[in-house]
Each structure stands twice: as structure tokens, then as C-alpha cells.
Image 1 (spheres, rainbow over the protein chains, first blue to last red):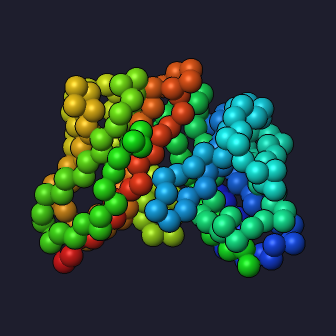
Image 2 (cartoon, helix red, strand yellow; image 1 turned 30 degrees about the vertical axis):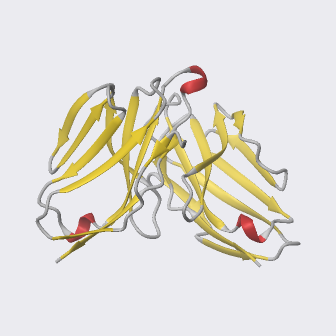
Length: 112
Length: 113
């Protein structure tokens, strides 16, 4: 495996479900990010982890809960989501907070 | 006013055309400018990375930054159907409160054979 891998690729969940998105990077980077991509909106930064410590949380609702157990893995735990949370969730990594990010292919989330 | 403005298109051109994609911005503190390409059902991939003003060329791609006009461009020469994708500009000040990447909406490009 190379690059940044995200699973699952697609997820349909009800508003009362709990699910988790997984991201793994094989690049030796020390910073990881969660982004939300919705139609007709720019990419929205959700969380930043640097050296496994959360350094940024952009006013994301508490129904989204990130976890970074080590520098290679990042999770996004989801619970009691709303239909407006349906979007493409992208994970990215970079080295030393550098500007060139490597993205995964994303998880297409649909909340019903 | 948005920090970064990018026309979402769609832009449709014939194969072999020169494509010009543009973004304007309002924050004079931006120093790092990037273009990402995103194919359907994929994440964005870094295409070009420029620091401060000037031009950068990589094969058929040229990135230009004009900080005096707060305007950046991506040119694609001899465009190919495989260039059909969404192109996103991104920029930042690179340090402190300005280190966060600010993204454009993305321009959807279709190159027709």
C-alpha cells in the first residue's frame, strides 16, 4: 500500500447510527487532516493532527469525533448525524505541516 | 467577499487547446500557491506548488502568480482528454495564523476528443 488509504469508500447511515471512517498513510508524514467536501463549497478543514496531537478543530459539531492513535492512522467517529452531513470526507497528510498535502480518495457519506 | 474566488465552470475545450484556469484572492499575506487536480471519485492531488510571485513550468503545465494583482493562473498546453478533471487552487500565508490552506471552489474542465 502506498499513499493515503481511506475506508470505507462509501457509507450510508441512518441518523441514529454510529460509524467510523478510517485513514492510513504510508508516507511517514507527521501531520494528518480531515476535510469535508460538499457540492458548491470549498474544501472545509475539520481537524488537524500534528505528531498525534490535535492542533486544530474548526468549530466542528461534537457529533464528529476524531482520533489519532499514532502518526499513521486517523479515525473520524460519527454519531447521530444529520442529512446535511452527507458529503465526501477526505483525509490528507503532510510533512511538518508543509503546504503540499497528499489526499486519500475519500469516503462518500450519505445520511438518511 | 470570499478570500479566494474561482469560477466553477464548467469549462469545455477541444483536445489540443490551451486552457487557462484562474483564481483571485484578497489576502495579501498569502505566499504559497498551489493547484490541485481532482478526478471524479478521487481525492485532490497536488499538481503545482509556487512560492511568492513568478512562473513555474512542469511539462505541459505552467503556474503563474501575480501578487500585485492578487491573481494566479494555471495554463495547460496541448490539452488532452485525460486532463478532464476539477482543478482547485489553494493558498496560504505559510506560518502562524496564516498557515491554514484556503481553497477555491474548483473549476470543472472537460477536454473533448
